Image (tube, rainbow, N blue to C red; front, side, top):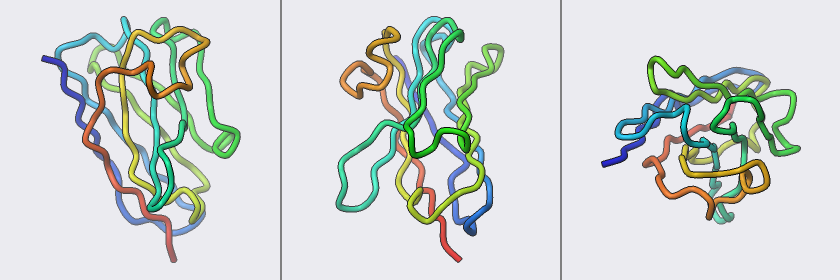
Length: 125
């Protein structure tokens, strides 16, 4: 059974940083793509970042490009989302997901078939 467990969310001031973790069991992170999505209150879930199963390609939403970095540790079977220069508009529940994605589908939520439970990120002074 595949399970994803996110951690690392919390309350941070604007300009601060957080690192989200996504611990995966039942599936090797280096054989499947991983994506991060977020959903703010009253809004649809949106793509944030993704990494190809090979690790050779990443993708980011324009709104986070240059501030967020996706990575993974194959030995720990864990993915990460480093978030710097956080803004109030980054406030949302963040979800990690894994699936048999290819470069053209990395940004599409329907391409992922396993999801974590989400972790709240609140950016506020």
